[in-house]
Image (tube, rainbow, N blue to C red; front, side):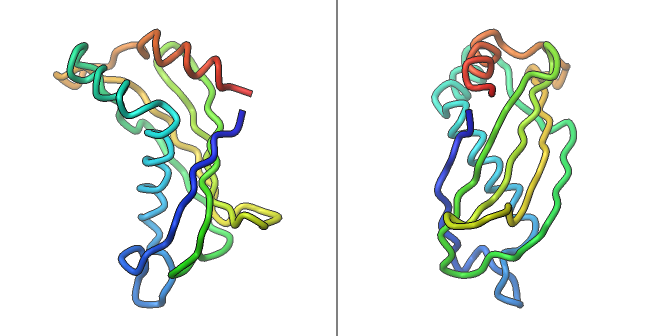
Length: 133
């Protein structure tokens, strides 16, 4: 299943050239992952279980710039790579677009409060399995 999150580009998102600053796409992808997993569950995991997510690896490819005032969408597909890693294939699209403007693959793992790698919580794994294609 593809998760879709609307995205509005504001002045603060752009650089001197008027295009979205490249690093902001990481923020957009992060926000979309939070929407997909559920902010309440992420807070609960940290507060009650001491488990948080960190980026293990990411790669981005840029095809077309976005600019001030654009209304876009972030599309996300997630799969479990292992008991420890979730892979998010994410992209930014114009609603009428024929190809992604930006594509990214972001791999997440979980750590405890001490920064030690831990398995993905079962609640998250179940949610990912339910939304996977």
